Image (cartoon, rainbow, N blue to C red; front, side, top):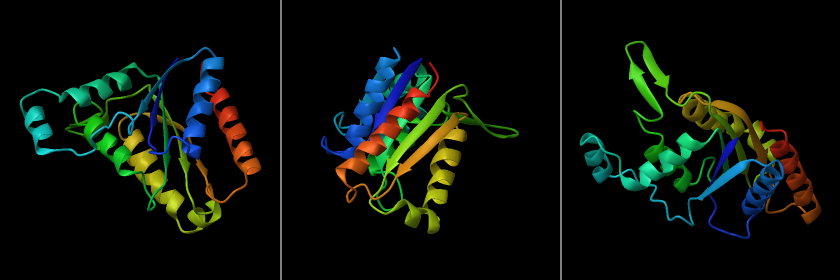
Length: 194
């Protein structure tokens, strides 16, 4: 299986980075093919610009978007790793959706309504947050994120959500608790299709 990891965190010492490394290591132990797209390291431009629209209208795709779309085409499973900031994805990840998952590539409209163009692809998300998980759940934050990200983005594009794991209180938990979380990450990644 081909696994594409889309990673969004600016700090290479972050817990998100540890999640990324755990996923890569686990998948490689299963002899899976893995590509990592680190949006900050790539300096991926998240802004859908006027020049992007001009290029689309000319029937072309901007070069940086075409590269990312080729990675998506290649993947059987997409793994998104990102922190939750202000109840949502970081701007770099939102911009990735805006610029890469575009009409004609990820979805289209027909006489009967929208149709996803990426069927057969599976998606898993790991999201970290500073708030306790119970707070995010009781406030409706988790439900809102799942509606917008899992349903209105991935499922809309025809992809199958195979899971979304949230880790709360990440900045304040003990190292032992973080190790327990990473063990859970490894267990989840080991359960994915081979």
